[in-house]
Image (cartoon, rainbow, N blue to C red; front, side, top):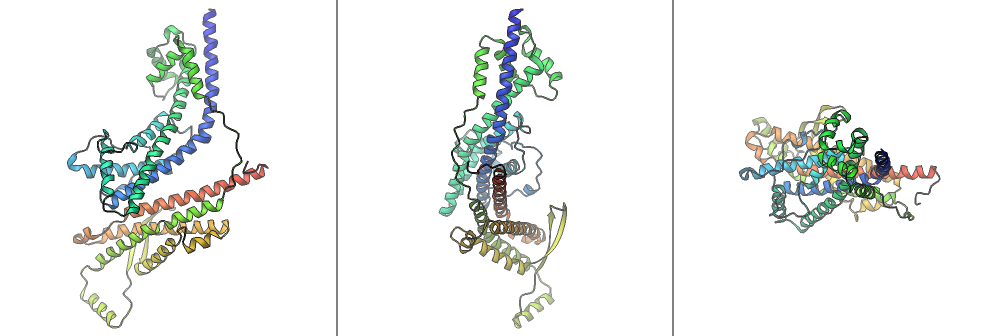
Length: 470
């Protein structure tokens, strides 16, 4: 009887100690590690998107015509099985398109919170990070996806300028480094959810269970009623039984508590004052970086416009063109009626575009965006402005780029849908460049939000009488 009471007291003490350790660890994960995880995954996603767009541009993979229409409700790891060699390009194209969409959903739409995450969701993120082995990216890899991506990566470096080779190398380095960092952060999350799971089983099922009844079969029989909707992980239940009922149990319990113990933080050093203007100027430079993609698009849509203009004209259209040439008149206006989805209204919107005017305005934007580089004259002027002026300019530039992105996407669909059947192969798609511009919009918006969040934090600290640099 006394031994039984002592055992119960020991179990209660461990449950209390484990609860306190998990509570402290939960706060640490929410406050620190999940923030790091999201930022590291953003770096990972951005690096992959860069490679993906280079693969598309080099025509090493095919565009997925349904990529923009994909709707994701929950993370799913794309296909990992072997390829049908006769359709390898088509299959890897679809897999990488799906992978790019999944990473975009994870970084830009997924919730990063302890209550939202669970073992299953963490394992899905783990599956996405493991999907391609960037640390060992070799053509002889056992992973089918890794092997094919390694071959494509080698091909992507041939016949390109040194800048593109450097971009590929930098992206691969970021993917490899981020993989290791993300794996470490996910390992901490898995440890937390595993011990939380076992704690819940103890409280709901085995708290007063005698040693003679503590086996997997008995626990599983009571599990469904005690924890409805919770998956049964036998490997965790096996661990629980050894920790609570075996001779080595006390040693195992001590090891669990030690693994959950937080390393004491060193005394905080005085942080240098945040240079808020630098954050805004980085956002401006990101917008300026879209100039190259816009330049490539300009060339393509001009060729597409020429394809449509070259279709057979009526007799009177030819006569009007001859008269215009004789009188040195301006070329006849080209009006396209395009359609795009208005996200704010949730409905399609039709818009008439004067192509000549649009291209003239677009060229002005390209020249101006190009001047926003670190050494550009416009950037130098912006650097001398106040924060209020710069953020106003950044917000306006983001809106301008979003408007361009929307219109160009609509024009892309218009050209594809209105070309004569025999001319469709001549129409050049611009989806890789549009994806690059979208990444610029997302990144510049992130910097704008980062600036606003840090400014608000500084104001809150000042209201509390705390120095922001403490």
